Length: 145
Image 1 (cartoon, rainbow, N blue to C red):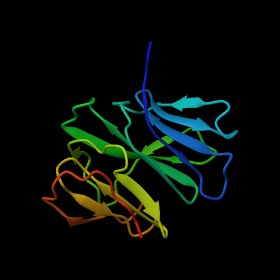
Image 2 (cartoon, rainbow, N blue to C red; image 1 turned 135 degrees about the vertical axis):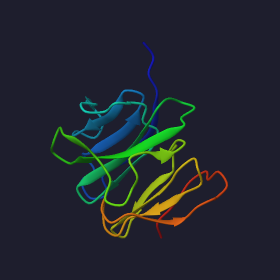
Image 3 (cartoon, one colour; image 1 turned 30 degrees about the horizontal axis):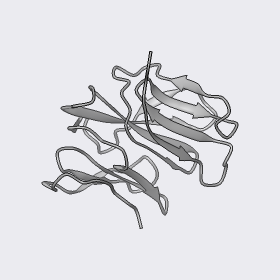
Image 4 (cartoon, one colour; image 1 turned 30 degrees about the vertical axis):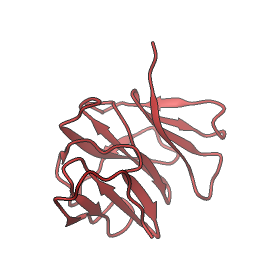
């Protein structure tokens, strides 16, 4: 069986921790990518296209397939095996897919743009989300500066 990986991200201060958004869910390595664990327990959908690491957590997208009509944002706390949906201002489902390079972390905040042209920004880490723009044309990526 061939399964794809869409995006890989290393922890900014703990380079031994690497995460990957993949068709099977979130893949996690604690040894710089030599070995991997697949985390998917609790996910209704496992197609993951985007991932970003901030502080001690990784945020990643899951969607209902490669031509998604809806997607969700989930989080993994470094060192755990538990996955949790991200809400706190985000709807249960985002519009369209959250694709590679469409989640970015920086300066303690996270930005996400979905396939419906909605741009979301967290207040801190994975909490306090607000939609700061809508109706954007398809974005190839997002950055937090």
